[in-house]
Image (cartoon, rainbow, N blue to C red; front, side):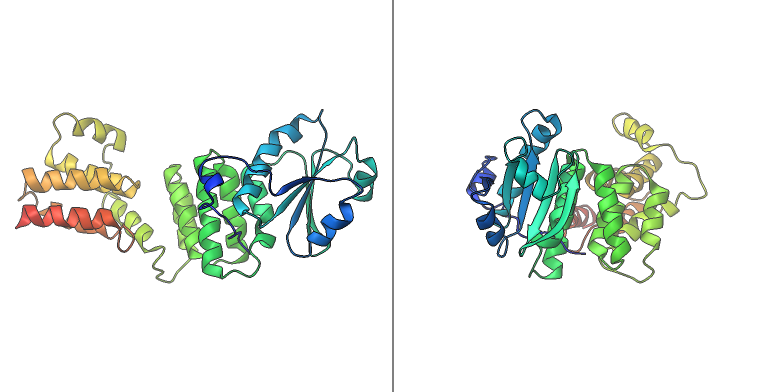
Length: 307
């Protein structure tokens, strides 16, 4: 599995949210040979489109955005299939939109039909990651997946993650992203299954095992839902409400809310259940990645109340 690492988010035009045509060219029979020669050095996306093709118009800005991010890592070559019928026939184009990915003078892969941004990024990942180290590739791929999820393409992002993990199960950073997504979707059983596929103790997955351990404390009981407990926080919460809410909120990834509830328990009821608030805070710290600033902040606040 390869990942696209040639993002250039430091590029001023991209930071400004602007599109650039620097890496986009219109293809004709006169410049086609030069384009194929250029593909020896840079991957080239050949986009076959037509003015009347609505899916082509929808996908165009997404392609331009991806290409602009690469800052020269890939070229977008646009072919108006109505005007350049000979080129379309040469590449065997039968429907629009059609994308052909050419690299080092050969056809690498192709796509037909309207594609999501996540699908396009996944499709381009192998050639855009050439020559880059695996850790950097994995990190950037994970970042693009998070962006896809944030943009509402969770299903496509999940599919891409599962495909990557099926090929390389030891990509633990990607597994962490998958488990986080499943938990956020309320799919605890699926999240536990994804985590259980790795038996060894892995640092990237350790926080998630700690989060599931929080919920085990309530395995034999039926506590109020997180929504009900949240309502009590704003009213007249009991010490047990504070404790239960703190652990459940943290297990759901709402770490600050969970820590605040337990800090409130420590402040207002320091002796409750032999000082269980401190123990709860320590459990939540285990759910946070090593060096997380939130853990440092709340450790200081906990010590202020204790000492």
